Length: 221
Image (tube, rainbow, N blue to C red; front, side, top):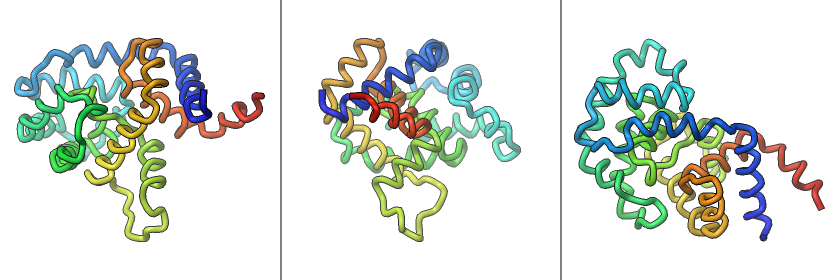
């Protein structure tokens, strides 16, 4: 096993051992919307499925409780209706197998639309919930780390808020990882009975939130 594959494997295993109940919670929330057509997502579905997911698994309760997020459920339902055709296509699309460049404009529009309601991080998590095999989730450490690696970190014009272009570039990196490390990810996906996007989310979470854990790996023969 080459070193990059070994790192992916070790990080995912550490995530799994540290958060054994994570996937149970994830499936509890995602199961509420898994078989729901995008055209059927109204404000009631947002309240019954998307809100519990963002609060319970996504850790967005504090952000969504702020005054600027008042009545966000209705606003999100409106944005979903606005992009329902693209979202319905994405719901049936696998990120690894798609020609992503042909989807760039719709990806960026969907992210920007959701971001206007849910902010930088909640937007990606909600998109992932609706289209779990196409849109990857991220959190602040992952988003910041990815942007620093794939853009000019000395760019003085870089702003704190993430754009649709930032999220699209993140998706291209996730797709590249899926293809480059297909064998490793296939094995981990089968072992833990999870999608490759979920496996990569666990890997990136550990890498971004526990970067110094690499020290113990370097000490191994």
